[in-house]
Image (cartoon, rainbow, N blue to C red; front, side, top):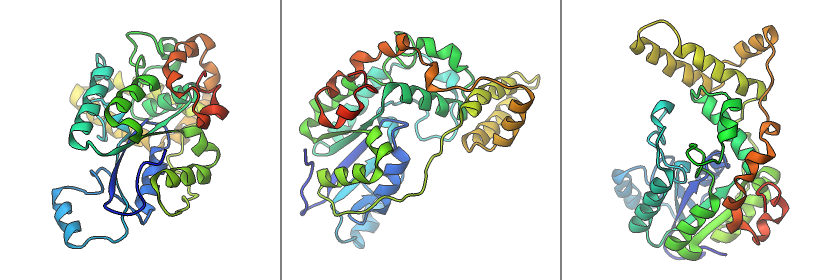
Length: 308
């Protein structure tokens, strides 16, 4: 499917995520492409309303697409885009209702836009999402959370329901919904970008080879929640503890505690967290959640990762 014309007025592309599916890579590519108007955190390539006036006074020639990109649109929660996350306030979030409201809002504001959705295979998505959780202050062990993945009542019950979100956005945006597998980006970033350029009618702009958003090691994933729990238990007043935890979570986000974790692992070795710890029984709960991708030739090489 080709989502837009090569010439004429710029079209609007809304990249909704998913989280942990190449968003940082894509946002850097959006910013680098000379035919794309994009500003981090902005809407349709504009930083704010003042920027609409500024860019209109000095327009950039050759822009074919204006892009809005926020991975939290696919999985909305109260802390999207914020630096600090309080996971204690995430319990009880009604994700399907929030997803539907986001879709309704986007369709009402931008009825002619195209939407880009990037998916990721379930086992890899679980591990990468947990890695992000612990590096932003999450304190629960993977061993405690994994058995609940995908079950009703668990925060992840609808987090990776690709079929449900595809139905939602297809109803609102029709064939202007573009769906691509993260695995193609993982295996061949150049081919991924070329495919997206073809769908958008863009001239070639090869991606940067610079590695972005490097993940945690299995050992680091194991130790960060331990440190989070230790800090939460410090016998000091809550205001001071909360301020300390904010500083800690920022250090964890940047993985600045890697040397400390290396020392702790040497003193007291712990089993690393890897995708192998996700049991087949847990994985099976996600089988219906990718059915909408069955038959898409782009997903044929990755059918096992999506349980197709």
